[in-house]
Length: 309
Length: 287
Image (cartoon, rainbow over the protein chains, first blue to last red):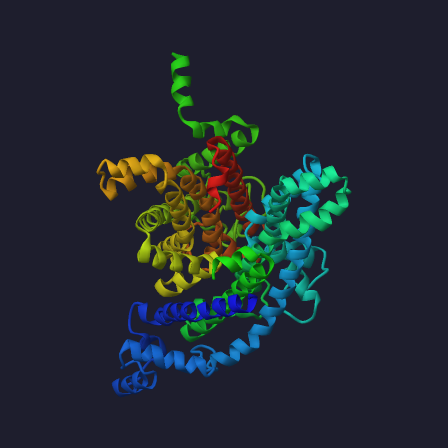
């Protein structure tokens, strides 16, 4: 049952990734000017130019080029970085673990703290506690991530000296980036949790449980939270992509290696093979995140499984 | 006379957003900000581009109330001019996004079928991507600058408005008054433009207003990466970008533009919430 849904959902990834790969492939070809101008060294002869055009296959039709490119990527060949003069695949392999580590920790941190804060906001509704959490949610969902990162550096790294300013030497260098990404994540998760609890709390079966004389704690943990968790899981799954988005900026500010800082630096240097490679990886990560979320949601909610039959 | 004016004003339900204390403060701040951005040349005490290297990285004080940056330019004047850049870029971008999104969403919702499936597949696809990633893909294609920032923001939020409009249209399409209009022989264009879109407008406008806040953050982020406004154009993001080099000696160069972004976005959000309440559309803004 759930297996069938998962397979259906997994198959949908194929057309989607093809569509994304076309867009990313076109980046180089939609640029004004001849892409060869970006690749060729100054002072090359016209013969060199023709040779280089042939080497990159740029003399062939666009469709052929696309299939050659995608074929290379399937075999793990992402091309050669222009500025760094290394295979893009190496650069990705080098940077990916850092992004996964940061993203994973930030995701865990914001999910756990966010759900707890949401429950606190719900439990303390109509008191100042709720207002406090709501204020935090407002701040967390509006303050730009890169600015928060800079403030964190100023306060905790420069003035207090507790954590390193930048780099990725040991775990202490992870604290500030995780906190920065987590701040926005917590706000989002807390908001969804609070609204979901309020919605579920209004339903008849909860009133019935109160009337039956079940204790408030039992209702909260046995009935309210399990029901309220469904929209939270949806948002958390979507959040996997958003955390990667947040990681892009935060990695850059903290000077951490990672896909995000690789992408930003490559954009600044117009190193397009690297731009394409890192964008592809980030897009893939977002898709896998959404996929996991959809499957988790279907596993929890039979209505979704039924709808796709 | 006064009564007549009050009566006339009460026709604008949206104005009720100003009736609460929160709405007054947030809305008042936004109006003030618009005025400041508009009258920037008359407000700024210094020329935004005037360099004074002898007075570089001066701490906040008099006459530079927010200090000076690495070229000795007045931070306050640049923050004021930055409001112009941020507000105009974000508002233009969201304007494009709302217009195109409404057309696409209305067409998808009204005609349905294959067209709807194609539009919604693309929309759902971009919907799952972080806005910064979509904007970065776009900037990668057409290169850095304010124009590409504007279009990047417009594209990043297009999915949101297409989804929202479609949801409204699908809901309205089955109402009796629409059926009656169609049976009276109205053309699809008439039904969509005169009956469906006007009724779908309120939530789209409110969500659009909230998105202007997100657009400001996105503009600042792109500017911070050096992909948005190029020097010497003053923009909140670009100011913070050049400020990072002086982070340890002149933190005010990044603190004040950041505060400007944060307060503006918070005000937009608070006022948007009040608008949702005033127009009573809480159920409809969630798509």
